[in-house]
Image (spheres, rainbow, N blue to C red):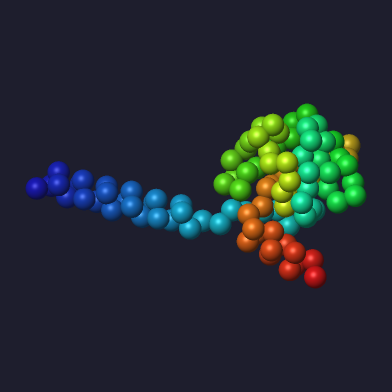
Amino acid sequence: MSALRYVGAGLALLGALLASAGFAARSLPTDAQFAEDAQFNYPFVKAGKDTLRLAASARIYSEKNLIIMPASAPTKANVLFKTDINGEVSRVWILTDDEAQAFKDKEK
């Protein structure tokens, strides 16, 4: 009977962990720049009127917050980006439609 109790408790804990992970919002930087319909053409990113170079150590985060390779980046996307001390793009966050709308509303 006690083994069954441990299995039940383990399943309940697993269910709670999986449920909480599904509702967690990702943390986006507040000091990043927003670019609507940024264009990726490795090793460059066109953000508005500016064409910026990706840094050698650039990280691109997908909508699911996974690091993706520059070749896997969409050709156009709403993004947040940060530049390094050399003016090269060091971090890019590809935004979901809801996140992009929130940043558009924030700029107004």
